[in-house]
Length: 427
Image 1 (cartoon, rainbow, N blue to C red):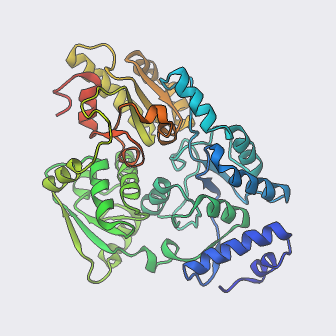
Image 2: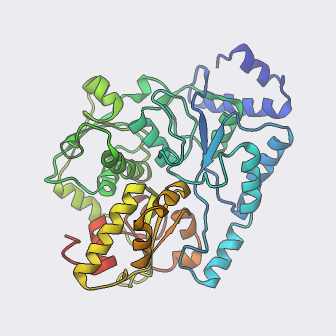
């Protein structure tokens, strides 16, 4: 790898042994991917995926202590993935909360470390750091070093920033050094499309199902999607961005997609069109039958497949402000149609702390609470790691949560029927 004089000096110890080891790690990482150089991180803020204080991760905390003791902190302020628990807002038994306390026994220590490294604030814990309320929205072309898969794919695809899917430790080391090895999505060549996806459904497909279909087909490669602009339009407005947030999270978790292009909609597809597509790219057609096939392919690992759900999570990745409002109205209307007053299943909507503060300023917050829905800022996935939660029947509209936990997936409108009892609304 060709290093600049500044980078070479860091590698040779100009700022001490600890920084030299950080640089040595980054050079080895870059060499593994045939990177020819390291380039500066240009975004104002970073993001760290390691936000959950599992007791089993003590080597990570020891590494962080060594880095901090050498006086090395992040060259950027940064946000972090959501906290793993939130007792006051999530329905859970005493034993479930006790197990969470044991599992995440190092949470306090980790958060102290993140403060020293330079986290943006005490409530900068969300997987949707790019939302305007949070304030960590990269600009097009900016170089990032994030690891959170749903944030990486959104930043690359919707915002046009440049970021590889990194590991949590590499993410932090890049932020400390201020450099990242240049390869993959940081290069023009690495951002070209390997697949053409032709959407031929009769209506806008559920974002999570469509994303799942694409992710499982293309895996880690880049898809160029045709036909979605028929439903989303050609402007990256709030509705389109919200759809792409959930679509992208499903592609990243059901496959390993880190970048997609939407014809006539996402920045690079608008500017460069089909010139982004590699010669000979295969075509994947997604129609109504394919969406239904994908939906029916999901396994369910509940012991009793007919069990009555005990808990519902929505918001993985975290919901937007408008999603909270829209779902408040949907739930109210569904309950009214069914003749019910409160949701039939204990339900938690999760969103970033700043988004929830914004939502709490509206009349919708009290209305949502009145129908029995809780709001929280935790990570449903981390909460679902609790064996006492994992063993109970939990449902979700998130394909990411379905993939990484025992939660059972239902498309949004089917989930609405289950929550409210309104069969008409769920069609």
